[in-house]
Length: 113
Image (cartoon, rainbow, N blue to C red):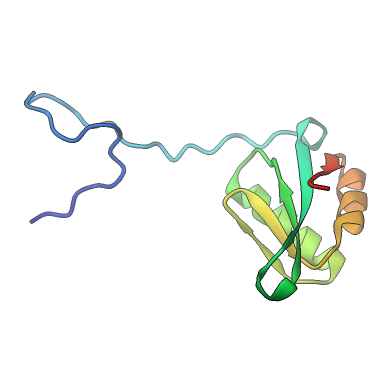
């Protein structure tokens, strides 16, 4: 048996010999300017009751998101990472993140209570 591509979209089988399977394109959006970004910041609880500040809504390349994550981690003095288009920062650093991102020109709101 051959290993089938898991990127096929909406087709299980075709009898057409000239049929081409559609592939999911891993297209990255161009990074918007900071003043065009609408970011939201949430406070989540992880396992064990640990707090986590989560920034969502970033539109752009993964490399730019990683740069933003690195800057926030350094300025807040804590750990974190970026996963699935979100920035995850350890602890309740929402106020500090809002100040930092506002200075960079981002539009940011507290969300989730």
